[in-house]
Amino acid sequence: MHQNDEILLPLRERLTAPPDYSPRHPLVARWRPASVDDIDAVWEIAKATDAVEHPNYIATREEVAEELGYSFVDLERDSLLAETADGRVIAAVLVVEPPRKETLVREFLRGGVHPDFAGRGIGRELLAWQLARAEQKLAASDEQLPGWIVGYADERAPRRERLLRAGGLEPVRYFLALERDLSEPIPAVIPSGEVRIVPFAPELSEAAHRARDEAFGDHWGSQPMSDEQWKAFIGGSFRADLSFVALAAGTDGDEVAGVVLSQVNEEDWTAQGFTGAYVAALGTTRAHRGRRIAPALLSATLQACADRGWERVTLDVDAENPTGALGLYTRLGFATTTRETGLVRVY
Image (cartoon, rainbow, N blue to C red):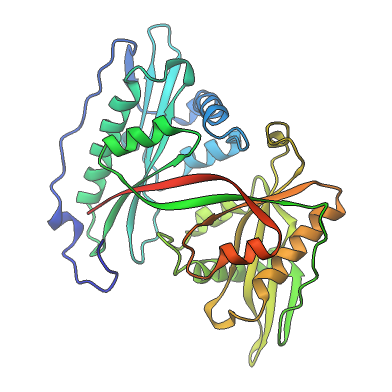
């Protein structure tokens, strides 16, 4: 892969945009872009697909609405629905290019085929359309950065991984799903130096956003979140009462040195088989690493969930995380449950 310090020509000079791909399939009477009026139809597909591929977490309607509503998603050009002759939407896909780009231009392949129609070749047609659209978007970019087309496949969805591989994406990273049983003792962790762990609050949101971006800056594939993405992230299933911020004393007052950001979707509890929260982000800024801030933040979330009588806390981690996060989680009692593959085509 390209190194971040490599001098590259702009993507538009390195790629030639392919023509539009026109999918065909005997079961599909109409292919069309999505609109905001299709939120429920897309959500139905997402729920059905998630229930097969990763039943422990199901997309919410709000999450679907957010993705379809982002200002940087051009639904007319970046989305495609497949309809049967009776008007049923049986597949929905998106190509999403997040707006902030420091070291990468990423095209994410979202969506899929309703399980009732899976395995019949519709997914191949949709992927061919997505790949063509993703390359068109990369070929229109002036960025002098590597371009990635990115897809993910849970180990419980081998068909998804085979499809992405057939489309020329290569498995390059693995992510582990971890669980922590809250019936086990939770250690109290005190960070070193003048650091306080405080609950997340609206007045800390902007600084927490900056700290999150800085903390994840050296993680695989990570780029800063736009203000629009951040607003969506701390809405919906985000739980401020289970999220915490580390404040470190500095010469100009306190600064945010780390964050733990949690989400709760009670609709997932039945399929999971337990009550609990999901840790969506945990990070410490580079200047403050090595001060036990991350374990202190996570311990606070674990205790807050245990105090509610919940049973487990879950999270995902890059198996090759450069900051040693997997070791941290293991020491705090987390155990691996499932694995997800990150697949990429690099330009």
